[in-house]
Image 1 (cartoon, rainbow, N blue to C red):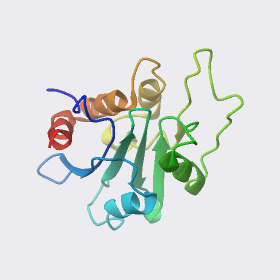
Image 2 (image 1 turned 120 degrees about the vertical axis):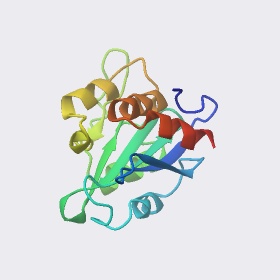
Image 3 (image 1 turned 90 degrees about the vertical axis):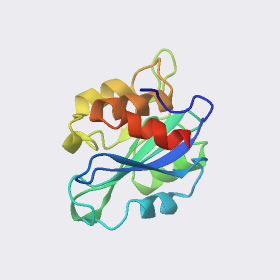
Image 4 (image 1 turned 90 degrees about the horizontal axis):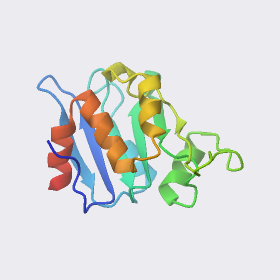
Length: 166
């Protein structure tokens, strides 16, 4: 198993789990797509069963965003670093989903940013809040490496690597 293409610094994928197993579909090479496009990629709430599919976006290896439908069709969102407000997608996600950002106190001693949003976004797939927090706060991982760890933990790492390699 290998991770995402090391030459690719940005990508967006849709991840679903039909009865046949995990499916990962590349949505865009460049993660700079507008947020509404990514939300539409989720499909209609409830159409794909439970747990619902999700969209993962890695932007320039600096941060990632995860989007998924929750109860009642609302969109749940997670951003690995809510302090990346100079990036268009990050700013849109933080604003649209009301993710609180404390830019004054958001950094620890080595100036690593902090995740924001729904850290329970993968709980229905077997990745609880505490375990996800460990991944997204790891100072030694780039965003694509965080996504690779999530994929490995949930069981779709090979499908992710194949989708991103195309």
